[in-house]
Length: 222
Image 1 (cartoon, rainbow, N blue to C red):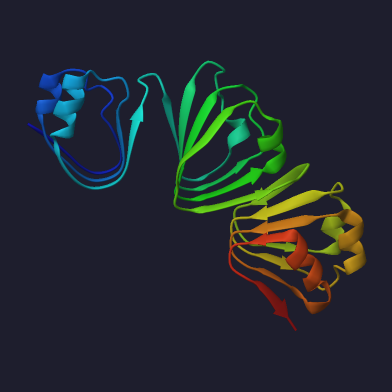
Image 2 (image 1 turned 180 degrees about the vertical axis):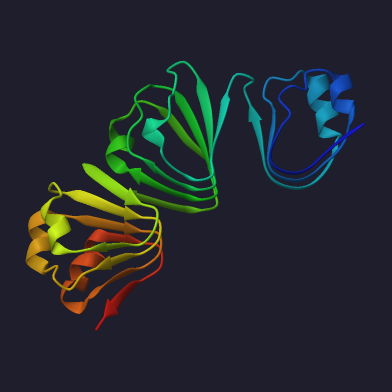
């Protein structure tokens, strides 16, 4: 008899017979349990009889669906998707979804942070769904962007070299230098997304609050 326990993803899509199901004694402490989607009634009943506890999410998934796990940071548009495949993205880290080339079926389990470009949602033909959302999900509309793994300080010289309507994304904190004026911000159309805080002077705080997405707070510095 087999025991499955203490796993982030437990994939049991290979269980296709009653005998295989009955060979499993218990399933415990699992974040995501993947079960076969097209089981016979007999196999489904045998799987249902398996003792289980502390399972955060159960999904019935097609056998050919690819499972992609993001534990670090990634631009989802850079992942090599196949047009005919089905994908399940398990995001435990930090990801940006700005574009996907192919019309494929994509389902997301979000435990970390995901920034979605709303232009992608409006223009893509992908079958795009969320299976669970337990993390930080934010939507924004932008033409181009750059993301930083740690804190980033933004000054006037940096903004000068960025294209208009650019978005800065930080996995930590954004600190805006005192030489960044309201005129510079309005002319550039720059936007900010921070998983943590954004720190800025009071004279530009109105713009920051209006055009930024912040995980925690906009902090006014003296």
